[in-house]
Image 1 (spheres, rainbow, N blue to C red):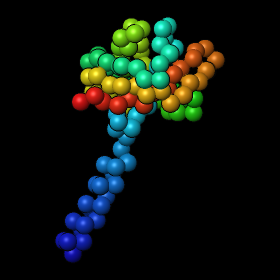
Image 2 (image 1 turned 90 degrees about the vertical axis):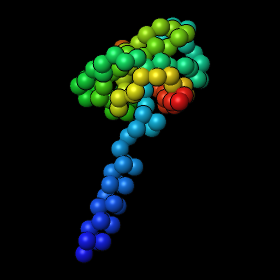
Image 3 (image 1 turned 90 degrees about the horizontal axis):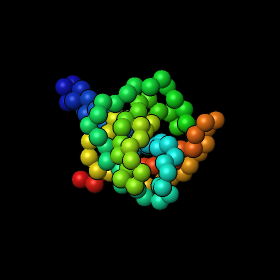
Image 4 (image 1 turned 60 degrees about the vertical axis):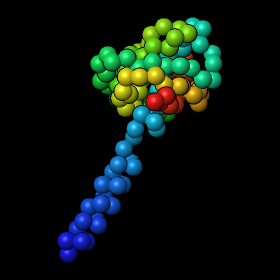
Amino acid sequence: MIKNIIAISFIFWAFAAISRPSPAQARAAIPQLEGVTADEVEVIVTGKPVVDVPFTVLCGDNYFFQQLMVIPEAGTALVYIDSEYKPGHYTGVLIGTCVDEFNTYYLYDLISLL
């Protein structure tokens, strides 16, 4: 009986760990920045606090936070994210663009450079 409980518990925790979004899977919606048109950009995530925002839908994706990030070619931006990123250097790979009623956003998958 104990073996069955341990096995079921292991399966549950493995599923929970795989299902949880991680920064490697998360998406960032960066507002249009002057001078940035590359398919790949360097992004530096600062240690500044993450801002909780009301549930926001941009381009069909859900975002729950904003985080201050530095894009060396353009400066700093408050970026919409769906999970918190740890401070550090990332490569942003462009996966698309979209326009809401006010802004153009570039959608990037951020990949850690650790």
